[in-house]
Structure formats: structure tokens, C-alpha cells
Image 1 (cartoon, helix red, strand yellow):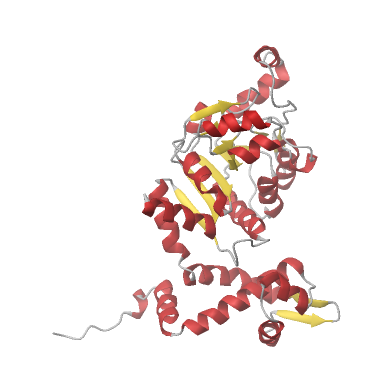
Image 2: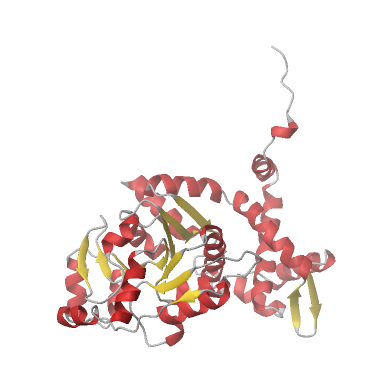
Length: 356
């Protein structure tokens, strides 16, 4: 048998990382530690060693070793105020994300979760721990980057409210691409007491970044059917609802049924009734069971389920292992879904699937 020569040109980069991980696992641990240190300095710098130690649950000795190495490479500066990332450090951090993705096996995990949920796309953000305080910022940045890639001229972008989608818009970075005739609209009326997390505010913030048109929808939850019918006759409301029907990109968060019901002010007995009906998720005013069937609907003005089911660019952002059932539920509604989630909930869903 002839010896086969290694074709270096075809040797994939992720294969190289995988081999190194098997050969020198300690090296990968060092890379992961330095990655996490650099990541937190990027978020919180200037920051001292003690604070960084608390955030990452590492000894100050480990922090000192990692920060000294990062400073030597010109990735951070250390002064009296603490550690701060350099421009070279920011560039390195962005490059490291891809490597770290492979090291942690997240590419494989994405394919597994995509197959389990049978949806279009899955993007997993790594956790440094189960209660990673910056995971929503990371998911927001990841979702914002994906959104930038799907916007086209004449797009109608729909947004829901909430802290997660507010984070997506906050992380959206304006680049050279200019889009024409793009419109941003709220998917439904407002929710929550904090104005900055309401859909109308988030819509305005994204429209300002895109320098495009937007419409707002100031209607509360829990409207009577007579009130809805009356409002829909108003020209300004009718104009927005027609735009909502034509949404081609929708960015939304996925909530747990019990938590969202509580936020919407439902009484304890109403929440118990919802849960007895099997409600596990809430999105854009609908409550669903694990099979994606509606168990309750809030009477308000906004996107209808039939509209949701025909949208081709759906971006759901959800994190936390307690959202596993909620994500499974929403994934049943429209298989054109792109899910941006964190590592912990991805593993929880796959583990649940294997158990079943």
C-alpha cells in the first residue's frame, strides 16, 4: 500500500485546532482562560485584578499570569485605573472568537441543534459559566452581525420589545453598506414600564442607525375586540398594520410563559391556568405549548401568527438553560428560523432530545 501524503492545502483549520486540542489540552485551557480575561476587560475595562478575579471565579494568581501575558503581547494596557484593552486586543478578540468556537466544539453543537429543531440556522455563543453576566451582550452582538447580512433594499424589519432585542440594536454597528427604502416597525404594541425596552423605542434606535424610515405603534396590551376593530379603522393604525403584514425580517425574543405572564400583569390564578394548559413559551403576544400550539392569545394589535409563519428571515434570540422548552416550542412554528442562543441552553435541548 502506498503511503498517502498529507495534502496541506486541504487540511482544514478546524481540523488543526481539533488535533491540537487532543494533543495539548492544557494549551487549550490557557487559551480559553486568556480569551475570557480579554473578553471581560473589553466589556468592563479599566478593571482591576481583584474585580476580574471575582467576575471569572479565578484566583488572582491566574489573573496575574494571564494579564501579564496579554500585556506582553500588546493586547492590554495596565495603569493605575486598571486593565484596558488595546485596539490590537480588540482585533485579536474578534479573531479568537472563531478559534474558540471550534475549541469548544460549538460548530458541531450548532449542527446537532439545527438537526434536532429542524430549523434553518443555529448560532451558538459560548458561556464562560452558567450565569455568565455578559452572555446577552454577546448574543446581541452576534444577532446584530447576522441581521446586517440579511438586510436588503426595501426590507421591512419587525422588532419586538424587551431587554434582549434592545441589546441586539445596541450592539448593531453601522458600516459602509447603505440600504434604500428600508422601514423598521414594531411587531406589536408596547410591553413593560421601562420605555427603553419597549418596541417603539427599540425601533427608533435601529432606524437611527440605519438612517431609514420607521413607524411606531402606541397601543397597550389587553384591548377588547371592539376597541381593536375600532382602532384598525384609523388610517395611521391601518398603515402600520399593513406594513407589519409585509415584514420580511423579524427579530424577536423568546420568553418563558410563566415569567412573561407575570410581566404582563396576569393574576396568579390566570398564570396557573396557563401552565395547566401546557404553556411553555411566549412570543409576540401568543402563549404556546411545547408542540407550538396556541393555548392563549392576548387581544392587541400587531403581528398575527399566520404572518409570522410565512416570514422567511426570522431571527430569535434566547439564552439561559431554563429557556429550553420555550425554544423547542417556538421552533415548531416556522422552520425558516435562525436561532441565536447560548451554549448552556443548546446543550440542555440536545440532552433533552437524547433522553427522549
